[in-house]
Length: 320
Image 1 (cartoon, rainbow, N blue to C red):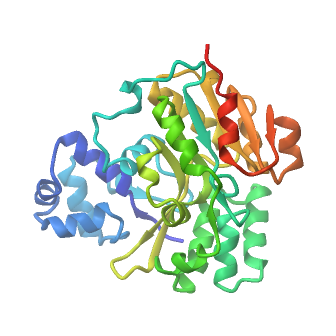
Image 2: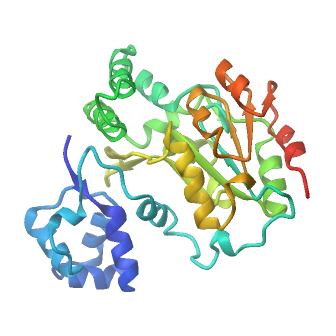
């Protein structure tokens, strides 16, 4: 496990300075834009010390430690949010958009098993693909749940195994080929967007599953928090950026979205199906267990939908 360049903060620093990538490259050692792009995209995850020093000087930082992210550290949510949404029009901030007249303002979804069907957990599908019999996956999971390692360290352990297996971006087309989006996904999302709801995903799943199975996800969701896989120019996996919002963190994810969107947490509907979604019960205004695989969730959530068909959630979006 090694440190990596804090690309999310690097992007944030550049935007705060109002620089283009070409200008940032000039200030950070006089490199060409394509070299700077490799830093900010994460395709060069660990530059040489002299390069780190040049970046530090370029952004007027005190130490290279400020742009290094250690294996047991998770990116700051604000940096991660800015980085994930860097391609969007900054004027289209959800807090400035027209909101629905319903007492609920946002619908937040889990990903694995909720919006995506055919598997329970994306991590398990990846482990199976690389030929692991479940031993490593279970061992790392047990270490995390026994609080012997952090979530970020858990991801780092997975990363080592995945890199050893030479996992590439193209492999995810094969991994996800037998899976699908849930029934009535687009009818439901279109209805929610047309009514002015803020939409989000808070999941411990993997971004490549979302990209493969809902390729136009960016047209619908205002906030997405998943584990992010990074690949080099040859398509080989080189990094996993852990989400700050899984398990107990899902509740904090809802609060983060509410703060950004300027809405109250009581106006949030959360839709999930697994045991790690239970942590939102004291945060979301309404909780919906959608085809749940967890008996505990059936007991804890406000509404239980047993049969697939996402449009069923629409009847619970009551107006004032």
